[in-house]
Image (cartoon, rainbow, N blue to C red; front, side):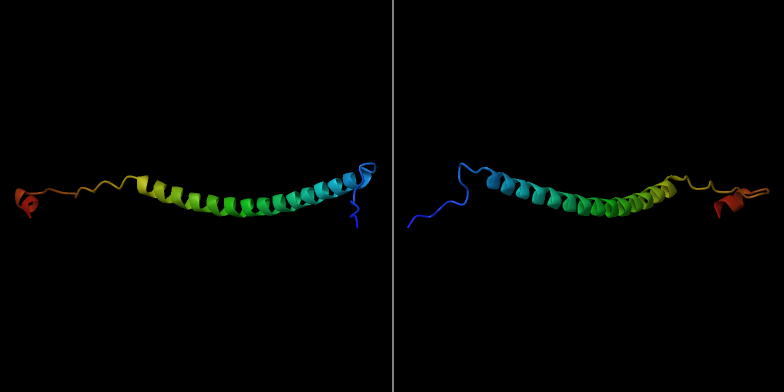
Amino acid sequence: MTIKPSVHPEEPLPALQSIGLVITVLRGQRVIFDAELAAQHDSFSHTTRTQLKQVFNALRQLMVPPDPPKRSIGFVTPQDKSN
């Protein structure tokens, strides 16, 4: 008993159709993967941007110099300075 190959060398059309089908399926998978990846990137970049804004706002608040101490109004005696 001989096994007949599914693709004959004289008939390249079925082989080309099979290759075309595989290429089409792979392209479809890539489009789906790219869409999912883009959605994940948008979500990730939004949360990252929000976190970076919070960090930079906190740094800006820390960089503000403190208010200088206010001097008291009036005459200060040496005894008041020592207390």
